[in-house]
Picture (spheres, rainbow, N blue to C red):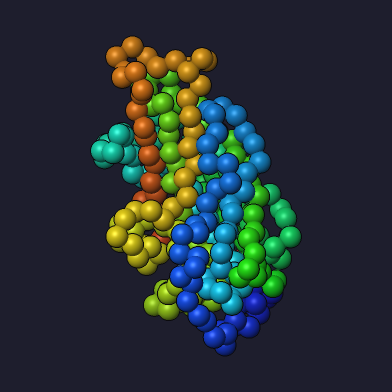
Length: 246
């Protein structure tokens, strides 16, 4: 906690410049697709810092919890639930301890399920480099009665270069790879909803064929977090104290 705060304070006096050359680089999941019912080691890859001179001193990651998440089927909002399409979605992600980039890290647990994690402290990631934060993903299985051929989990991420309150958010302080339409202080400012990373669970058509009555290609299902979850789970809390945003 102390190292995280010290690293944040040391950056408050840094002079920042633009990031036009990095405008197309996003924070994404290294292996963005995984077959249902399997598990593997994966990474959140930060491909650039907030600008050309600042270090990224921390990151905050949120997976939809599946409780009040928004479900979209073939581009249309659905009143269904996550469990209509995934049999065991909930505690599917686990942070792997690794100090190669950040000194401290911890999972975010709600009701016994990991809904995200944070990492921060130390020198952080230099602007000229990338960093991969490791986690284990256990892919849920697609519900046999669902027409889903794939379920895309939208993962919200904040890459932090300066500790501020939400009023101080700008591209030099934090890069928000989040939804643009939830109505939270963590929303990405964008004309399109292109911020979150995507982790897609694909159906094993050999072991779990589409049921009768589904289209030949099946349904493309998307799971998005609710605004309430983002407001609850995006902040970084250490020992009961919220350290970001201030």
